Length: 355
Length: 75
Image 1 (cartoon, rainbow over the protein chains, first blue to last red):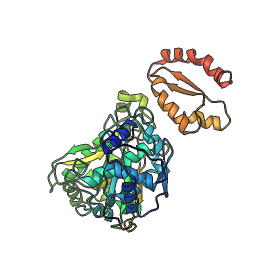
Image 2 (cartoon, chains in turn blue, purple):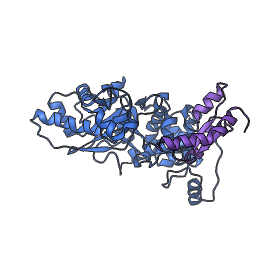
Image 3 (tube, each protein chain N blue to C red):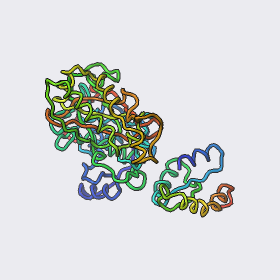
Image 4 (tube, rainbow over the protein chains, first blue to last red):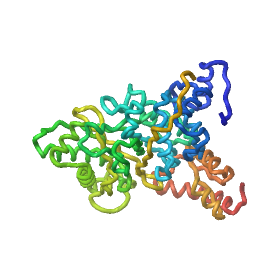
């Protein structure tokens, strides 16, 4: 191991030392012993010193070894490591504005969506309760990214992470797309991946906002009503998107039942994106009355998302009454855009049985 | 803070204005960006939304210190 080692008399003392150093997210972690980290590095199939990117605001270099350390601490299995590596690569894309995102007073958190073959390989959940709790791959992979952001990127609450309230989503926010029950093409194909190819999609967002809807599958008016409801949550009066939006991305996670209703009435993904962008608008006078100092740009009504391709639509969750909308932050030099990275599934070295 | 450091790196006199609540973050960023000694003037918190009269009073109260730091007359 190339990084300096901490020493402790036993696991319990090591854990308390990690808490005291501010290296945890507040929950207990698996102590990252050299053997455990080495095993996780092997699971990546990459050399320990390969640099995946630089993580702000501390500008720490995310080597595979350091990321493996975060994965161990988060409780990941070796099978999760390829997705963790991909998620770190994705957030290190300059377009993600990680430095600014980590430092802001907003509650933005990275939402990781695991796509294609990476879902089965890591055991990621896409159905009931996929956003947590209870699904190890989802929770631990999202947590590993957060621990990397804290310990490599040096984001610490009140010092370098200035989120006024923070968010439960900042602990972990990761799930898989339900490609099998989606009437639409896999999300990753919209970013140029082949169908089934392993990839992660990451967008900085608020935690999920639910949309309650029960319609009539035979009525086209139900489809448009659902679109209006979702658009209303995207452009809710308190969200950044209503005032600062336009160039930022948002995410919409349709449950399979809502997705089927829309598909039945002729809405494909592009059509849904266009309809949501057109409907997620607010009269300028209303925003000016409520929060005029925060209102930017021109136009009336004011769109929450100017470019329909920035409404990222996917299917996940169990069938039922609820879909989810993730509004966003809308700031940073690149304006809060989505990023992605391939998940390398054929690189893992043979792992020792113990360690 | 980053703006101040960017200006200083460009060879321009620069002072970072930081409110008291954000002083730890300002110092973190100054260290992370490799310029821990960048001149700072600490303001009371908050500044945003305090209204024009209070803002004018605040500006007047820091003008001498700001100018002195821009001239390099104070560390």
